[in-house]
Image 1 (cartoon, one colour):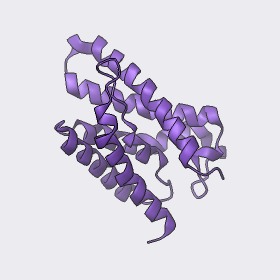
Image 2: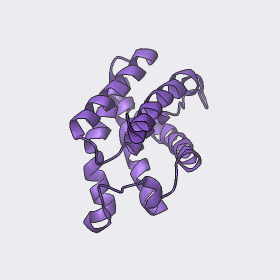
Image 3: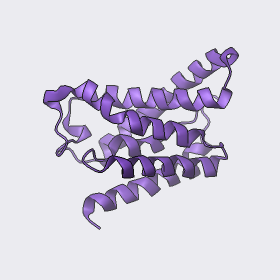
Length: 168
């Protein structure tokens, strides 16, 4: 097992454990629960095979669903952001800035990295809360929980990336 695979393995299970045993116990304002496990999708190497990445993203969501007893909504949202990640990256970075082999989130401009993380986080959380409430009459609750939870998730994610990843 090479260094990159070992790092992804440790990050996969480390983020699951962090989410389940620490962050699921945090409920800011009574309903805001940061979901930083999606960092695994954000930080996964681009040059790896897409099918394996989608399967692992689904498994990440399923593990979270098992511990949260949430019936598959985390798996659906995580799989969706894993699927849409490449088109979003191409849109944000453009063809000229995008290098599959040497892509590193810390190596790109902060505003592009921030937008990439924010977009995937908002999308993930909107799917989570949309499936949780599953009603148009609860649209304001879906939007408010999405916005508040996303803000805290983005803050914790960026701090974690700055602290625990190498700049290349």
